[in-house]
Image (cartoon, rainbow, N blue to C red):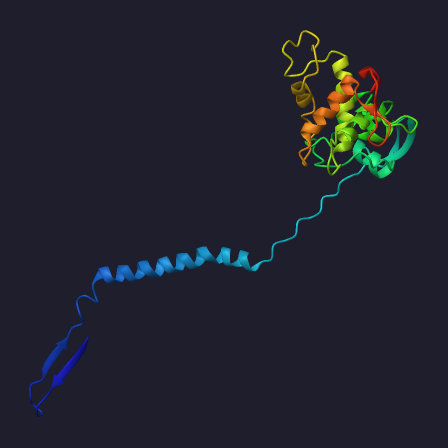
Length: 260
């Protein structure tokens, strides 16, 4: 508050005038609003401080977890009639053991997940996906790969049928296809039914094309040679595989029990 004094003479009267501030500026509501804004700003600054500090700090690298590995051990495998003693870790698959340790590269690694069938081999005559099983699980079993199907330099009937029927193109899946077809014929001769067999309680009357397609469904041919693959399996099953070279063939009867 300020005072204006106007005096005239020694005995003059003095007029005292008083100037008042704006009532709106001095109102209690304006003071409360100002304090509220100040409090809100202070609270926001305090709340944002930990996040700002966290962003300036570099994230710490995760500490490596030490894993104990089992030492290699001697694994004895019989592959294609030959005994192998391989130093393998327990986690090595049968596929890697054959390819990387035994040097048998005929069996191919396709998906490495058991979906394509390129790694199919025979274990005691039963077809398996070698990428899904450990080598240590097959000690004492007779493993047969595509290299072991021929006898004394002569291709097996299934191998010859695949050549005659042009049942391959790039050939990458062919070793698995041939091993699977070989086991298929053995399974059919044993009377094993499939999901398309009309009566699973009885021996399948004949190996139809539908039966072949179902029994070979676990082997994928990305080139699309399925029609010729079915024809090759049927040729080996019926014993109409030719012998000889060139364009001259002599047909002969083959018992499918001898194919395996």
